[in-house]
Length: 146
Image 1 (cartoon, helix red, strand yellow):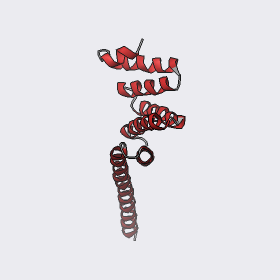
Image 2 (cartoon, helix red, strand yellow):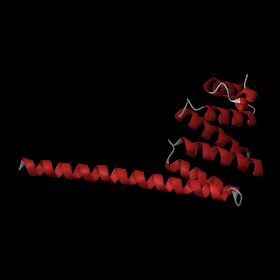
Image 3 (cartoon, helix red, strand yellow):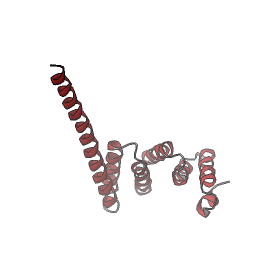
Image 4 (tube, helix red, strand yellow):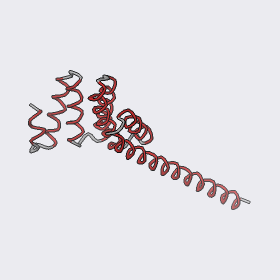
């Protein structure tokens, strides 16, 4: 009797793990799909590109490339529409990328650029300088920092 119960517990646990893995796999596929769709839509419809990038990020928010893609497309959408809401999304997106990969200089640099666009000069300089500290020989970072 105890063996049957143990067997049932093991089977249920295996099904649970398999279901969780499958859900994560499907989310990763959908996120990748929306991410690629966003890139393909940049030149044809920036609002659709923004929606696709946002959907990709929502499906996998801990993926720094999704945060950076959403930030990049948000900045492009702002450039085309002049809607400041896009800049707010860009700042948040790059901040998420910095949070998830604080040792990545590019994340700090991109956040610095976005902060500069919303007139947060002191904060932007701080992130430019952090990028320089992480990659001291990068001429692009040096040009913006200090």
